[in-house]
Structure formats: C-alpha cells, structure tokens
Length: 456
Image (cartoon, rainbow, N blue to C red; front, top):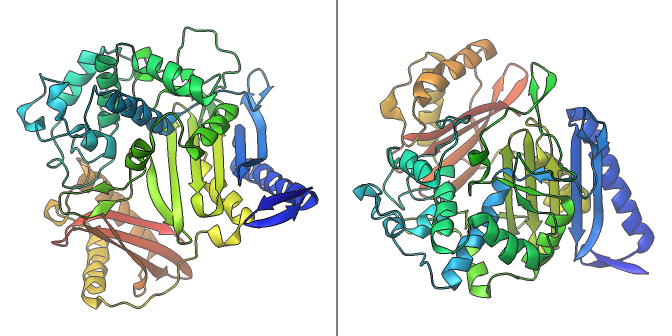
C-alpha cells in the first residue's frame, strides 16, 4: 500500500515514520512548554496522518485529552460567524454592501459608510471592545450594540485594517436579527450538522456537556483555572464556541470541498480585503489569507478563557494542521510551524538574513527612533493608529529594555513588506553578543504604526 504525500507516492512505512516524527515533536514541545493538554490533527492530501490527544483535559480529575475533547474556539470561531453571515447573504437577507445602519438603525450617523463587508474584514474602524467590557456583567444584544456605539471610531471605514472583536460581535447580532433563529442555531442547523461536526456547539455554563476540557492560565509560573466571565460574553460572534478535534477534521473536509456555501461565497471569504486606496490586506472573512513558499496559506488562531487554538491550510502542499490547547500561554501556531517543517522543510519560516537596503534614509530615521526610545523621547505625533494610551504605556517599557541592553549596533535590514498602505521593516540589531529583531511599521507619511523589539 502506498500513500500520496508531498506530491509523491510513499510506502505505508514512510507514512508511519512521518506520524511518529510528528508525535515525538508534539510530545517534546508539550513537555518543554508545560501545556496541560493538546489535541493535534494533521491532514495531508485528504488523508488524516495524525489525530491525537496529549496530556490532560482536566488536571483536577486527571482526564486525558482525546479526539472528542471539547476546547473553546476563541477567535477561530470567527470563520464560523462569517459562514453564518454568508448564509444570510445567499438567502437574500443581507448584502455585503449594505450599510450596517440598515440593521442597527440606532447606530451613530458616523457609521453610515460602514458596510457589512467592513465588519467581516476588520476594516470598519470600529474600536475593539476587548478589555473594555465588564466581563462579569451580562449584556443583551441591544446592550452590546449600545456599548459599541459609544466607542469612538479609530479611522474612516475602509481606510486601513485593524483587528476588531466588536465587528464580529455585531455580525452575530445581525444574524440574530435577520435569520429567524439565533446565531448559534444557524451554526448548529446549517453549518455544524451538514459538515458532520457532531459535537460543535455554543458555550454554556449551565448545560452538562460531555468531554468538556478545562481552560487554564499561568499565574506566577503556577497553573490556575481560567477566570470566570458572564454567560452573555460566551454567546457572541467573535469566538464563543466549543469544538473537538474530530469536529475540526470534519470542518477541514467541508472547507476542502467548498461545502456549506457556494463557490462564489467561498471566493469572497478567502479574498484579501481591499482598502480605499486599492491596496489589499491579507485577511478575508474570518480567515487570514497569506502565502508560504510561494503558495497560499489560509489560517486563523484563537485565544479565550485559558484556551488557544490554531488551524492552518498550506494549500500548495495540501496540508492542514489543527492544534487545540488548554493553556493561555500555549502557542499553538508554534506547534503548527514545527509540524509543517517536519512534513516539508520548505514550509519552515525562513531565518532572517541581511537583504539589500535600498532605502538608507528610512534606516537612518529608524536608527534615530531607536535612540529616541532609549531617551524616553516618544511623542504622540510620531505615531498613527496605535491603541489608546500606547505611547504612555509602551514608551517606558521599551526605554527600560533598551537601557538594560546597552548600546545598539548598526541596523541591518532583513525584511521589507507591505500590508495595506503600511510599509513594515524588520532589522537585525546587535546588543553586545545578542541579536535582536527590531520591527517598525510606517504610514505613507512616515508615522509609526508598529514598534516591536524582541530577541532573535
């Protein structure tokens, strides 16, 4: 018996060897990172290479993770919200070009240019509500909407991209208002059931739910139970679902077959957002639409209540990877990257190395920015489209870090990329014997939209 793998027919023993190598990698990384429980699925050329649980779904009862264990979705649920919304588009109840004020008539007048498409692609300009709600308070749909109405817009609709849970909360409410059933009922009847996702469902504190995992957080190096939030926060469209590895493998099959929705809807879902300038941003409707090794990479991640999730589809290699974890500090994307590199080394994230610097004036400007940061000389006018309070909070943090690191060596350009209308530069910089990555995003008028500094 042979298995088609990486474009080549492999004997069954090679297939078994691959599974064993992936399994050994996951076990070692789980132990190294201290993740209580994981569920990992790997599909190559339509064949499940690995579907397995690791560690504990519940530490208190010492319940092992299995392929039926239910994890919270976090924002991985956004692709399901987008699917539910597109079902309403196909039914003629909603148009992507509709102003959201058609469905939220009491919204501020400034919202009239915002369309349903803007909500789906995170280009609405509506400020993210994360961290601003009282997570112990229950809200009705109308109260959620009114809370979001009161948030100032970050930018005019379509001007740029910024991740906004608010937009997906509104999309869930919109589905509730037009579908004749709740958002979660739409998912259950029209998405989960036809996809064969037998245990996927909305979160409930009251229901007795078999195989529910516990979520954990790391506090001072000690594993603790997740923090409690009100039930209403676990009914919203920004990512409040339960699913198992079996459910996600069924979803993978549905996505591969372009099931549930029409081909045109899937094309919309997986097309990059177009900004007002005509530039594109690599995010569709609940999916990141990226590239790896010259081929499409469609993916999303999630994080909520002590759970972390990742789902990636490397289309050129017909490789899909699902990783579900029950620790807030887990990094499922790291597992995805490691597994992808085992399957095909060409999928590994290439190491940063010097590239020709054709914009020495930008390098000089960002060298000066690094020194201003060390001196604590950030000014709000230097930045654009950053979160509220960013300069006051991040400035002292990076100042202290740079003073601790000592003198910086010259900036060596390692990557230049465009995202939307921004240019993003990544440099390698020496601090003593250590190499760090210095990453800055700039607008067309050279204001800073992104500033990071991390060990290489």
